[in-house]
Image (cartoon, rainbow, N blue to C red):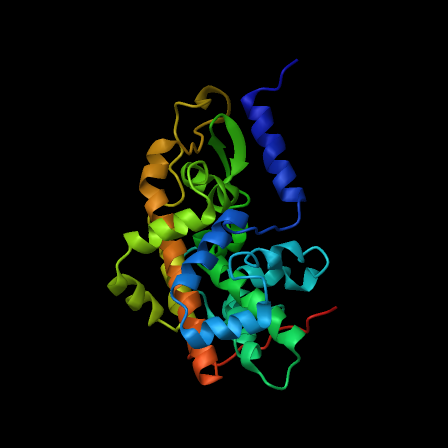
Length: 293
């Protein structure tokens, strides 16, 4: 006998609860877009420094590296997100200073390692790869989300007739229209042209990483979680969260802006690092857990 929508929803939710917490922000495509955006705004010093560390690689190609090594480097898993309470825009000090680390402490911790002359080239290269990825992570709103639903991973939604979760939609599916038309470098060129020099300069001038967290979290309190609708299976399991084109019309521009912000801020951070040999981030570094090999 075919499963009812109610049964499918319950099974889907159960599977989510049994899975370990995963976070794959923006997908490979989104991280490549951020890398290409940053490459357009690098200074000569930063461009030379990146080439010296990456060789034939570039910021776009290494953007997803931190996700690729995560299975063999499980200690880096918590570094992909930072959680905060459901009733406050700003996470508390205890949220920022978790012993296992988070994406906030990862940005602060890996940035100075990129230009630390006491480290090997391999260690500096790894720090660069992590920083590129984690700056991208921090601009996906659900990576500054709520622990209660694992950043939307426990929120089942219906998209094009298929069940997935809200986090997955924001990682990948929200960019479907662009992915179907442009490669990552093409979308980066469009976004770089779409947002003005003044906008990018304003974003690039913000080196307080907590401001980035608040920016991302603000969307969670302003409609990013879709309202349940009663016209999809309401007779079986009650109102369903449906992500259709009307939702995308509202939120795709936000995703585009967050990608552009991440690219501008990645470039600005690397420019400051390679021009001054010191970190530009204003907060006191938060200790990160040891990175196992």
